[in-house]
Image (cartoon, rainbow, N blue to C red; front, side, top):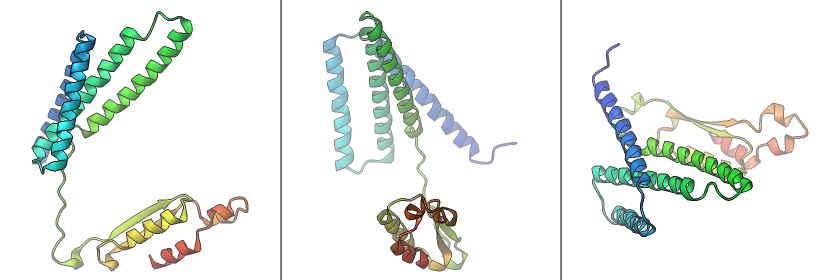
Length: 216
């Protein structure tokens, strides 16, 4: 099935984003493998921290173009990936092996846990590498043609204060009242649960919340 107009560009941008992310990982890995002295590592750390602090200062004080903000984000991700790989290389080279069986065994277990955490972090970097900047679609001028909106509030025995604030916030949405409906999806206060004497007390909905629900 042929792509619709604009799908080709979306696929191209996605391919460029994935390629850029893979290239960033490869670059960070190669840099992390380079042998460096303790003094060089300290200098690199100071420089990287300086870059991060400079970006933080600029982002807090200035309104920057989106392209520059995106560049800062990519730079920070590359720096973070480099630091992760550099730490893992250091762990393998200097902290595992040569200290007895118990040390090797538990050290390896800790290293495997750190590998898991590193992989989890890199997956997070992939998600935020090139986020989409979606623009809101303006509503039609005729309010009668606006869509009906359902607001779903799932709950499972959350404290009454949290539920009350959430429902009141949902009720204050700036939208025609006849065009939206708030639904409380209560998995903790159902009739079956309330009929069970063992859990009835914790399953009953607070009266003040029932008052709010009656307004929805």
